[in-house]
Length: 319
Image (tube, rainbow, N blue to C red; front, side):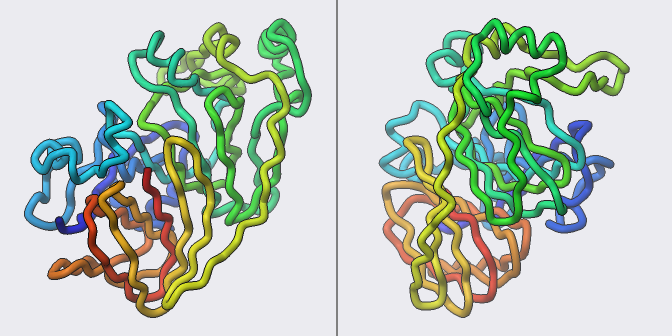
């Protein structure tokens, strides 16, 4: 099975900017490009095949055509396509929000919950985000602070720089701050409960919808454990590998290619490659794909080696 280039679905949320166009080569008529959904079969925005004999198919059509074996044996543990991968450009602050876990989301939203991971690609000087709480509070205090616009006082504010990693478990209150570009690897879900939104208005002048009651039911109101920022970089011929995050939903690694690297696909899981810097070529048997910054590649599950040649940074995700 040949690896394929994917074309993303785009979102123009009001807090977005233009860096996905200017820094990552995204082509869109949208004035604001807040998100590009690089690997997605979600009903709210699907990726499409942009190379090879299946060009023009949606990713879900491509999977249906070739069968579930291209997803790998580990995908059998899920009754849905498990991942959604995005690039996100926050020109302004995102809302303070929380995502439910699987049980609550399936019962109340008809889809799975959302655990996600952020890899910071760019951060303007002083840029920060909110990651969990800085103290334990009750639901009553949480609700009161939301109503009185003081909820930011109990959130854990973290200044960030490129290369930082955050694993956001379902139930963790969080928000990306302005001046940050991230690669987000998440469960295949689009369920978000807004807690606080700076009294912003939508395009029609209406306050953006909040979901306070649901947020109160799913939020973890304890401080988050401090994440270990030390990560081992493993050297291989032609590249280095840095494990970024792993949970029961996904594993994510950063690869730095310098020269020619031989990488292994396997029958356990498909692989997603996001090019975050540089360029080169990816070769699997007779298929050769040029790579450039911003590209998204889907490698079907199979027992085969492929090579990446050039100088580039890749985010590798699999289940």
